[in-house]
Length: 543
Image 1 (cartoon, rainbow, N blue to C red):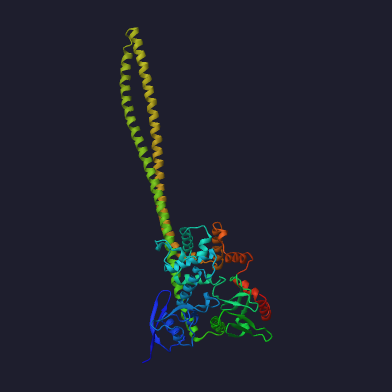
Image 2: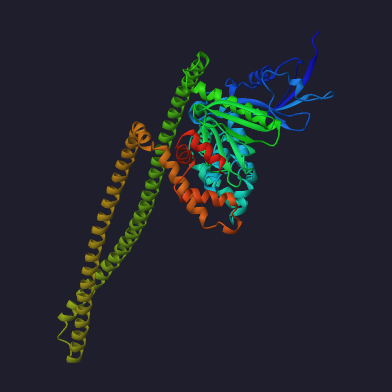
């Protein structure tokens, strides 16, 4: 029975414990782990470990895993890590699981500060991290405060006069703009933004040239880059993989032979043989992938791309359907709110009209009562008039009596005239109020008819809104790059007012210098590729 060795592999979200044959190779271990994790693009990944000399290393594919560690009592420990980066992760990474494990590594390097990230980009990336962490369910699903140290690096947080709550508000504000974004789309966008960072996908090693100048060697998907020791953002010399013919080392002396027959061999020195082995291992692996990318896809990759395209098509259709339904619901909710507001306004207008009607009716009742009183007064006057006529017939009485009766008659006639005038005024006032009452009732009926018409029109508009959703969706699609640039510009302006220049580190000043010159990662690489290999080797040796 073959001897077995226990193995423990730590991932970002789990720990795998199993056994392998003692003669199992590094390639077999990587294959077993990637299969267990559902990673099909396993050529990007490796298993990092600490060897028996306490050095971080990668197991060689053709070597036995037991040669890496000397654990007699316990299992062999490994960490799943991204070993090789593609040139364009946003387009080259096919499988969703692959992208997720890339995201884990890149996010950890950015938050820890291993990859330099300016504050405005860090906040934007943190907003996508928030969506990914919360399964893209939206900001309202998280009730407890964010642990901002897991979203932004210490270097970013220390430079700005902002509390954790203020940082959290900025992250959530950015996250609210990523409406209806799925978790996988958030991962894609995170990697698309992160890949533009100067230190993304670069593995650094300390080296020296023939002049014993301390320098950095950066290995990435495009080639070998040489950096000054105090600046890991902008390389000074680069050697693309297509210009390199051979790589070799002798202990701590490393040789890079160019393709050009007349080219000089690049020579640099590492700190030990182990570092030279790591550089050779990473360089040959990156060079191999560089060559494969420029060849037709294998059958396996073609099948993966077809399936990924099918899944993306289904996902896009579901997303469009969801967005259409949400847009339609928002339009309908807005229509409902407008109708409710209109109904409330009409109810208030109806209540005001009803109050006016009641006031007018009370006034009419008062006038009717006054008219009744006037009629009674008229009857009294008529009886007085009869009495006056009777008195006139008795004018044959004495002069004093006649004068008294005449005076009494004049007073009664004056009262009759006054009552008649008052009665006419009351009748005129009644006619005016009755006319006003009729006008108000007509206005009220017209308002009620208008309200009924508006209600019916809103119902029709509500049905029309559903038919216009596609048009709204077409109008909402914008140029992603332009939108991204605008967001970064606004974030940069917003943060500039609370930045403390005294807390800026050397790498921050270097980045600001790059920005002020209008340079970025790709412009820098294009600039330093000018000239032939010999010229760049001479430049390296003179550093």
